[in-house]
Length: 102
Image (cartoon, helix red, strand yellow):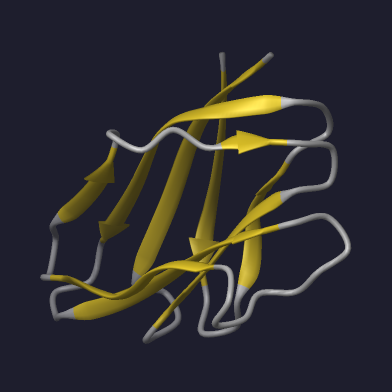
């Protein structure tokens, strides 16, 4: 099992890009600021960009100093597939994805 972490900015950027076939086990989005922040999450096929078609979570409200855990949905990623995210404000949300090669 492996872990990948990143600070999320206001620009949709990859948190995890798969280098082989892999499956996510959990995703954690922690608002380390004092105020409300929102996040968007995409699953992007290799060679494509984050857009409305591949968005899986839109405007998740995360109250100050709280965490949203996504652990029910498992995602299977191929080589080059990626999980992207952005936040309503820079320096507000950290993301951690746990995944395993398959």
